Structure formats: structure tokens, C-alpha cells
Length: 170
Image 1 (cartoon, one colour):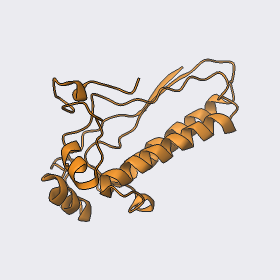
Image 2: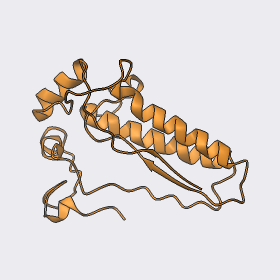
Image 3: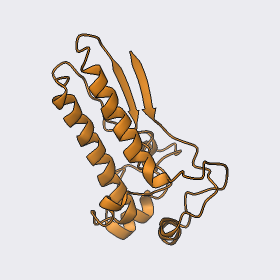
């Protein structure tokens, strides 16, 4: 049984992103929001909690057939643009909205690990937590503003030919 929950979504929606866009624009020079089509009730801030809830729901359903193997690919939408942490994560980190969104991803992973345990699935389950292609281009401003380097000492980031664009913690 295989299920894919989340993943990079097309973040081209037609709406007013509010204060998140202003923060992104002032910090990184871009908002991460583009124009396009979306349902009237779509809000980026709801995506990460929704995909986390769906994954927890799936794990609960899998617990009914514990002997049946399964594969859950949980592609967290955070910490990609647009950077929109949920209100309960606002101000949690010392690294602005981006750091708050990282905190939210960490909390989501914690919820999934807890769901595995609560459903008796943790013993025979492998969990791989990794990233894609190094840090985003906003990593340099974060390094300067918060003293944090997402690519450690490696040069470059996402879409770069340098090691910082391809090294993964795996």
C-alpha cells in the first residue's frame, strides 16, 4: 500500500497574502507568492497542518492491518516558499518566519513519530527524514541576519552546482 501526502504544491494563487508577504519581501526581497487560480477558501498557512493531519489519519488506518506493509511518502510543504508558519509557531524561533516554519516542520515530524508509536507501528517502521537539494536562496540572508547556515560550511544552495546545493544529511 502506498500513499503520497503533501509534496510541493503550485503556490500560484490569487489572493492577498497579508503580512507574511511583507515580511518575506523585506527579509528576502521576494514574497514567494504568485498570482494564479485557487479556491476562494485556500490559505497557504493551512497546508502544512492539513497534510500532517492526513498523514496521521493514514497511519491510524494502517494500524488496523499491522501485518500489511505500507509506504508513506510525506513531503512536507514547509519550509519552501511561501514561508507561512501557522500562528501557533509565530515567534517560536530566533530566526524569524523561516525559523518558525522550520519549528513547524519539526513539530509535524514529531506528530508523525508519535502517531507511529500510538498506533503500534514504530517497531517495524523505517523513517527517513531528509531534504531536497540544499538550502533555498534565502539561506544567505539568514546566515547574515541570524548567524545560521543551512548548508554548514558548504558553498552554494538549491539549484547550485556547488556542494551546498547537493549535500544532504543522509
